[in-house]
Image (cartoon, rainbow, N blue to C red; front, top):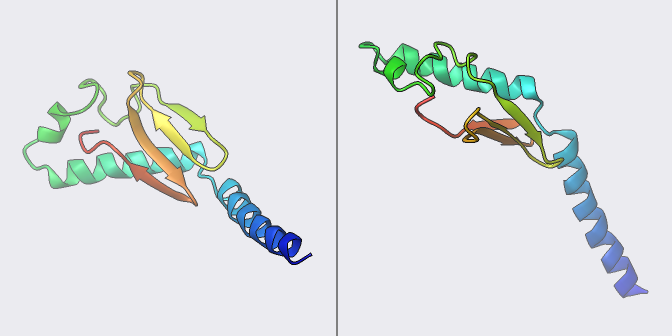
Amino acid sequence: MKKLLAFLIKFGILAGIVYAAVATNPDPARHQSAIEAKVASLKEKDILGQAERMMVPSSAGNGEASPMTYHNYFVASKVTGSDGAMLSFGFFQKVFVTQNEL
């Protein structure tokens, strides 16, 4: 009986963590706003326009010209660019932009 109780407690804790991860998975709008904020901060820091030359693709002035694909993995999510490169990933309502040269 004690083993069953210990198992149920461990399973309950694990189920609670998984539920919290699923319930707080960032949506596509949160990913988009994080990417736009990163692009804006790069433009703000760059006085000579070097960030514009490093854009992927170079014709994307504000990051919206290249299509982005949202991938939902229930406990985490990511956004990839048109070339398949991961632009951001997120979990627990946090989004991390993965490419510095957006």
